[in-house]
Image 1 (cartoon, helix red, strand yellow):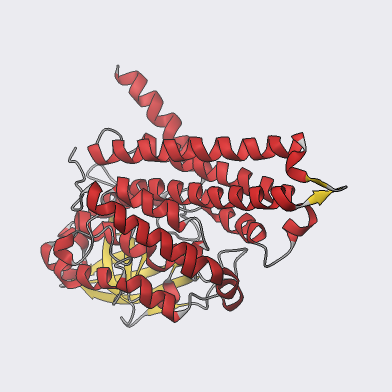
Image 2 (tube, rainbow, N blue to C red):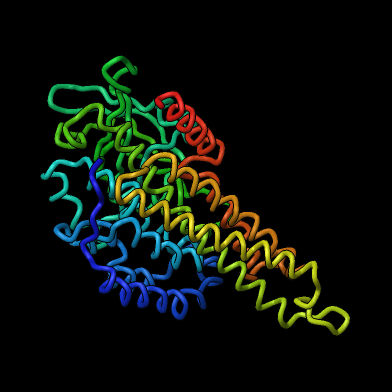
Length: 390
């Protein structure tokens, strides 16, 4: 298995990471309520993200990106998680599940056409995989692509597609034939948003993550040329989806840890000053126990995600480890956010307070890039197969 190599040394990466951290803490955090109220990322923050190269930090330098490997990617994600998760969604698919399909499986022509524009933020890509009847398991895909002369014609519907209302490019998965002995029959196509027959529904109304837009996308007789088939391989889709999702799971795990750290910091700040009967609530042992559980989860999650990223980059483990990290860290973030609300008491249930937003935002982390239940199946099934192979 090939290693994933960084194009930036750790020494050069540290000031970049420090710049991102300072930008998030000083420019983004103070505007979290503005993002939530407007259900949008302000244009000036979007422009700043482009200038900093955040739309292409995981895209190779030859295509205009920073060329960070996954160990560096997760350090960014730990910072992105500290603020509104909508910020990360703005450029997450360009670097992650959509962009990595092109990086790992695209032809030279496809990379040349799209990757530089993805890295600059000129183009926003969406990962069009999830369907009403096929969510965490791509094998259940129903969207079809039929060859018609030199073209492909795509029909089907996708749901919960991040950035769909803003997307310029849909990285679209479709079945070209029933699964058989030669492969799963799933291909992936590059479909520009303006292609006739592409219909994007109004943005979804979600529980949280205001500012991160999702929507259903319908493909009604969408005709694309043969050059739109990623990798010129009708069986590349399933491999591309699995590879992109595995990498994305480590990123999401780190994002969850960053959010949990923010929930812990908010809890500590509140416990130190809020009083009950004249005594700071942080002096109460039951509150200290909740803080201890939060800290334990955050430290364990951070260590796990860094170890998992290192093993992914070396090629040692790109299947079970990512699912373990994603499962543990996202479940941990949910528990940490719940404790944060509990520590804040009634005020923690009030809108415009960070822990209330965090409580709603982190719930989605256990769903996308494969639900917790799917991660358990991947982990358990993988362990059994390893045991049988010994």
